[in-house]
Image (cartoon, rainbow, N blue to C red):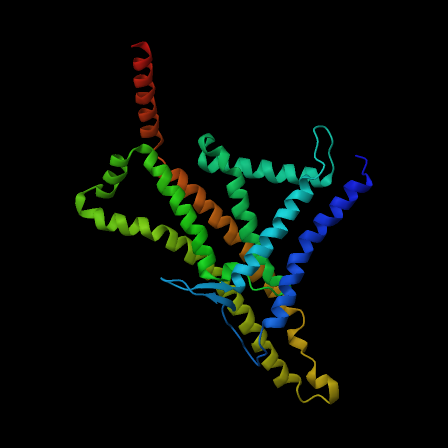
Length: 300
């Protein structure tokens, strides 16, 4: 594929749009984070508070970083599909096709053909969650370490679960709360409400605990270094020997592996909960009845 000057210029702008939001987030973190000594484990910083009658709206570090990551992911998607044409292939286009094919196969395998249109949504959840967790590698506050961010995703999934459950009819949906016996209705209601809470706490808790453990280990290694090598003369006594390399190795698990794993688990729970709550047989019966009614009216 021949690349014109215009094509290369758009590519450069998209690459800049991928990198610039992350750099802005890093600069904002450096300029706004207060200096502290020792271990400092805090939540997202609050940049602005907007007063409302019921509750104040907080503009936090997690909100800002979420939008910055969203811009970077959007630029990455446009870069991977830029110039894509039928019969013309390059590495980025092959990578984009591989992502689409793997996501389609994942959705079909876990949700069935009826939900094949969910592939973009599941791909967005996987990418957004993974990149949000991995943002800690460049010093940003990961949005997935903020409960409100992950709970918003889980709440959206809960709305979709309820929507597809209602496709079997409102009466059948309400009847499900009284099964297998009416005495179980309160427990079924609690179980329904617990779905978004458990999904969000699982994701948020694993990411936050990884950040906390990494900070504690890094601080402990610093104290151990001072105990073992602090008596060395001159500059040697101030070199953090044990803090070089070991925290980076640990972050491979806590930041990279755990972050990607939690993104995959959240996407899997989304697919299974939506597909599992959809009463397909009841939906097909209701659709057949509606078609019979329409055909009867047309014949009349």
